[in-house]
Image (tube, rainbow, N blue to C red):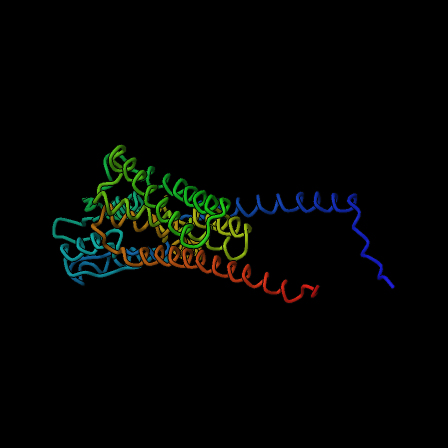
Length: 340
């Protein structure tokens, strides 16, 4: 006695459901994208921004009191003299420092770390000093490149590098490359992208001023972190992994990177999340390598390395699992085949 077959779902009912899903999903994605990009931009303000205060304790007490009036804006670091404060700026421990001298207050900034923060500090300290009838001398300890004084080119490089990584990861997946071949293709593609990007940003535009090969390595590592993540998740869960990683990098990595200002200028937890994603870590690392001789580079370098290592490991693991399934299925088919 034969069992009744399942009744196929009419096509005329499936189409409206798909249409409704699209109509609902598109506005949700648009709202999510608008929130991710507009929220940090609309709430940009200093939040525990590292700032140094240097000089004798008695002389700096008044300066500290004025700065602490902006509750939560600054994370004050105290230094004995200008030399110590200058070293802290160069080491990227602080974004700037107010030095109390017999001639009056002096502000140390580093526009290479963030032109937006340097301008904000200058305005805040100058206004406070003007209210007391004094003038502030500003010294840019680590200036931004002459060809990119506002950091616009560095900010504009975040999205193209992310897109290049997504494209490389998607191409490796869609071309059917697996295992060692896929991992090798990702590494070679990232290396070439890093060399080309350094040639454009350093050699042609002159917006990067550090060691050429170190910058190329950072750009390559940032690209590999994205491409390996895309290809790795796709190797484990299928082509849907491309969209998951690409969506995460685009919706959160790019607007939360702090490239246009600084991570401490973004609302929490956006600033912290951005530094755990390749665009934010890549931007921070590129600034350290290009303008600060590698100072404070360990954290972002490890973040990118973890992304790349986990992604490449997932690529190899996905290939191994697929090979195991392929060898198991024929054996199962032979066991179930009737004896003739």
